Amino acid sequence: MENISIALPKGRMADSAITLFEKAGIAENILKDISRKLVVNDHKNLMKFMLVKPMDVPTYVEHGAADLGICGKDILLEQKKDCYEVLDLKFGFCKMVVAGPKEAKDSFLTNKRVATKFPNIAEEFFRQKGENVEIIKLNGSVELAPIVGLSEVIVDIVETGNTLRENGLIVIEEIFPSSARLIVNKASLKTKSQRIKEIIIKLKEVVETFKEV
Ligand SMILES: Nc1ncnc2c1ncn2[C@@H]1O[C@H](COP(=O)(O)OP(=O)(O)OP(=O)(O)O)[C@@H](O)[C@H]1O
Ligand SMILES: O=P(O)(O)OC[C@H]1O[C@H](OP(=O)(O)OP(=O)(O)O)[C@H](O)[C@@H]1O
Image 1 (cartoon, rainbow, N blue to C red):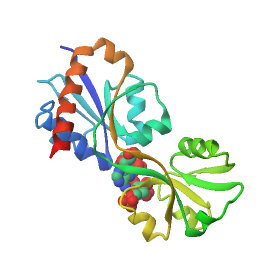
Image 2: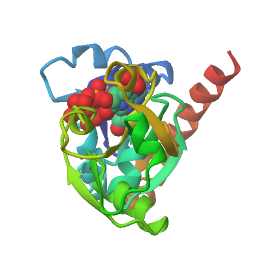
Image 3: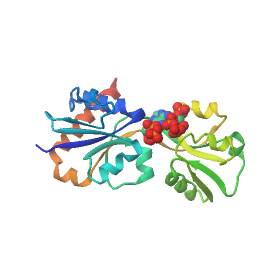
Image 4: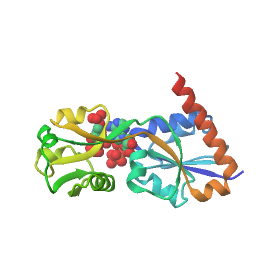
């Protein structure tokens, strides 16, 4: 039987991703060992789990350092890496939006400045609308940008809307909904086809069971 390696996202998606594999019976108890250790081997099931930054998951999978990975649809659309997206895992729900102060909704600005962690998504969104914008790449706390005059609007993730509210911003336009996805290395799907398909089927069963509850 071949060894299978899986890149899981650190951060807010980690618990749900780990629980999913445990519920599917793919990894038993092994994942509780993940704390500061970045790779955990389940020798019994010939599985290797690695914990990486969410933004790095597609890189590990594209290069084949991981056969499978879990990350948000937002990251897949931003990076457009060369791997297969095979399953919507139905957690990590959020929305990609354009947001800003109320005034920004009503005014049409030329050469608007857009602060974002997602420069490619933002660029493509405004290009399709025929709007000329300047993209300002940030790595976090994006809601600060319009407050301090770094940008007129932002393109960012919204879930509860609390961060926008607390910073006096509103949603101006929705771009797309996002949730966690299972991705697969293209070559692995051919060379380790049987094991990978078994894993996909087991995860799908868990995802569908949760949906019915
Ligand atoms: N507020 C949120 N609520 C629900 N899902 C979110 C939220 N923010 C982000 N997500 C989803 O979870 C994924 C991982 O987000 P997380 O904040 O853990 O990592 P990150 O954005 O790369 O930040 P960091 O730089 O802190 O690692 C995102 O790609 C997105 O799909
Ligand atoms: O609608 P809410 O439920 O308030 O969630 C939205 C916030 O969550 C994410 O930020 P994160 O917590 O990842 O921090 P960051 O600013 O460092 O990216 C996102 O970028 C928003 O800022």
